[in-house]
Image 1 (cartoon, rainbow, N blue to C red):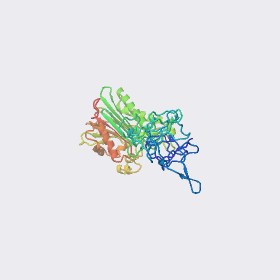
Image 2 (image 1 turned 90 degrees about the horizontal axis):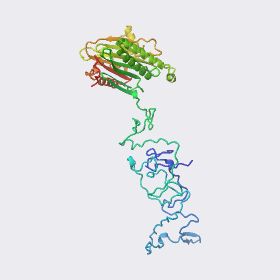
Image 3 (image 1 turned 180 degrees about the vertical axis):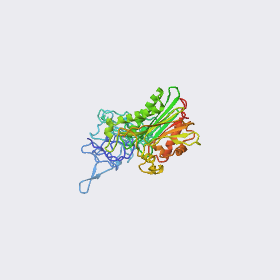
Image 4 (image 1 turned 135 degrees about the vertical axis):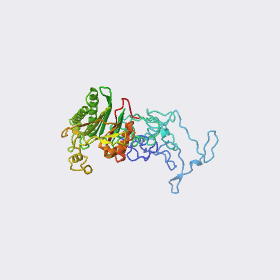
Length: 498
């Protein structure tokens, strides 16, 4: 293997280099193509004096004066003191150097075997991948004094017609190493590749595993923030400010009852963080429940019975995850089977149905804020059990560190599946807020939730969901936040957010 020369700056763009660099970090110049300094003597020394000619080399032999001791001394005369003849035949004045002699074109003199030659991959020499000086914001290399012309080497390498300099053709490597993007051209306007660009350095490409090839920064996942506007119902989910991933999921949709009246559906699930694959559990449960509802309601199944069946279908979908090989690979000894909570609502022109298992909630907020709002669900949690048993009041129970320990969930290790369902017939219009504890932790009481809900929530459900998620993030965003908003009564089919 040839020895790589030690360089302090790139020969192409003057970018500072570090010891061991094989390619320039700015322009990608192949540093291994720079030849090692030859061992032979240069034609002109750096101090301006001419080196002594090699033994037997043709040239001018200046007579040398004899030293007092009889040995050879300094030259008897300087080259500038000898007279020469100009091209017109007249004598040149003393001190005038003779004009340079051009080498005969018919018989070029071959260079020494290890003589210097132009470096491979010089910008402008046609080396693939090397930008020309001055292009795309790359500054041109500084101009240096021209070195004496070197005759072309007798090889089969291509010759540049402009300069007559011969360049060695680089061997094709088996693999091309990745090069860091040039930070000076990364932000220039122009067409970009179809690949995603890193949100951190804004220069590197995002690999299939979700990390930047340049800086290694993890990219936001698709589930970190999700929004869906399904006509009269909308939902928003966000990872929050403290969690490394979003373990919530939702599903919203619209359908029609057998008599043609509209019905809207919203399902919200919250993955149990202490379980294996909580994000997959919430996604599987929300999809299964939504599909079950949207299939059962058009067949004429009563909405409350359809909600019960949907929760059972969601539980079966989560239970199936426990038998998958992926769960066995990820499950740690202290983790449980995949698990999540679920809450949902079905809104028709005259009926409001809710169903849940766990501590996610449903709130009712009337359009007329003069009438009181209400919470329509009861948590499956330690605090709720203490209050129901009369052992603590609500303030004492929810101040305890065990308050949010859930007593009901969907999963293969759940004690017993007990879906809760309820049916309501509101006598006035309003909105239904379906949410996880990532929201209601910042607006727990129904009155607090009503203060956050915009006054035009019934006409703008997507905007309302965005406002509610923003309220949780402004409050600290300690958990994943997911909320769905359904106007009541169900608007006609095709109505959407303003």
